[in-house]
Length: 215
Image 1 (cartoon, rainbow, N blue to C red):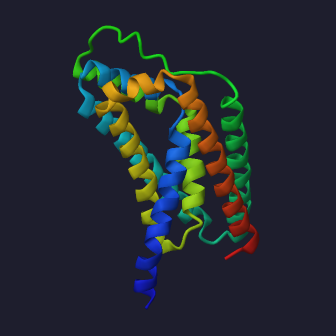
Image 2 (cartoon, rainbow, N blue to C red; image 1 turned 90 degrees about the vertical axis):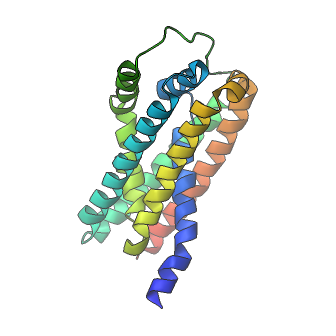
């Protein structure tokens, strides 16, 4: 019965991880601009997308598994981190709603010079691994929230968050020709930021309720 219950609960946990992952990764930033530009050039797109998605997946898995182990016998710390994560998501949602009030767009008009595969991967690594926010988002935030899930479902949560990265980077890289005009419109980003803000607030409330209710 416990196995069947775990399998039955995997779907919402997977979706929870995916929604959280999309909410954190979908934003105007250097990494997204680089992937989109590589897609516009049609240059080493598969390699760049695979690197960015794999890097996120490894960081997410390390965060979830590491946090689960660290918090396993520390319910008070787990509750404190859950409340901290709820606060972070609330602030993140507020900032997304603030961004929605401004007319920003992703500049993809300057595609620059061509890159070798090695140079493209080096730049992808720099945009991904030298950004301190990636560790805050994937290792600390996603890790601590994933660690709140029942042990049999933590892998599903990590898989959902990782799938979000793969979907997003694939859409940016392989759908660049179609997406570029859309991303160049400030209105599109404003609508997207509103959706992200509301989603982050909903996740914040769910996480806060989980933290208050306890195990």
